[in-house]
Image (cartoon, rainbow, N blue to C red; front, side, top):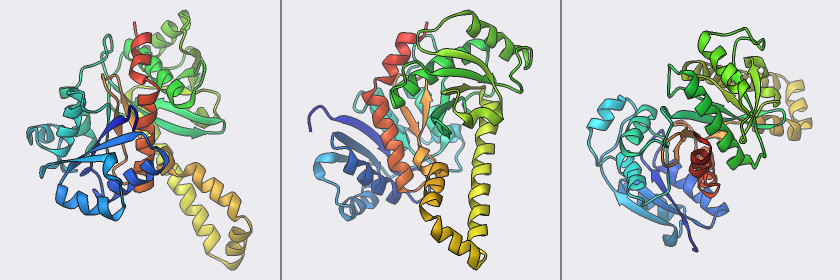
Length: 335
């Protein structure tokens, strides 16, 4: 491999790991031939899976440890487990420039805290933000913050606007993303004092990286008129969980309607192609891979309950952030 990308992978985090992690690595490796995977975890559990999925020896290194951050650990207790857990060692490899980014499906709180303990913040950024990809009628949106910060000030939201726009440009080659603040109404006078102050500050200045489009309400997020939706972590997390629940409800009810009668089953056969496209549009595995923005290296959080397809997609996001020089994009636009 010429100038490979080095990705640190916590193989032990999340449900059904390390099986889904190794299978996900294999799926990603099939479509990307210049990534080297530094796999952290229990060698006795990982290596048989490497053989099962026939991953080339030129594509990986296993860094053995028996210690694991458990899903029920608090962030603090996970950090206190010591510096030999698979999660800590994977993040530490970024700190020591042995890898360029990390992917983990493990404990979210632990990932955030251990990342902040090991990695520096980008200069002039006070708080990191968790960003994720949402489908819309016109492509993909970036939404942040999704829970890293319950309380934010105007500077934080402006920083999130810059970081989210940089991410959208890197992932989707957008020239100048449209940014909006998530609010209870689109009118200028609506919202709390902090959101109104942020509106004024964003509206008064022209940004090279993005165009500010004012407020957006929750029911318009999927319309696709805005590329980056910015909120504090409390509001963003509620929006995220509501969208996930709504998506699961729609898919469940549609499946029930199409399998509960002969007419429904015939309809599903006739419309198989359209239904498949509809399901893919709402399949969270295809949008898996949230990004903790604001740190000196990319930190990618895969959903803990995803499968190998979802984990492979988080590796794809990870690769794109490195190839697109996401961190430099942020550094060059943060004042």
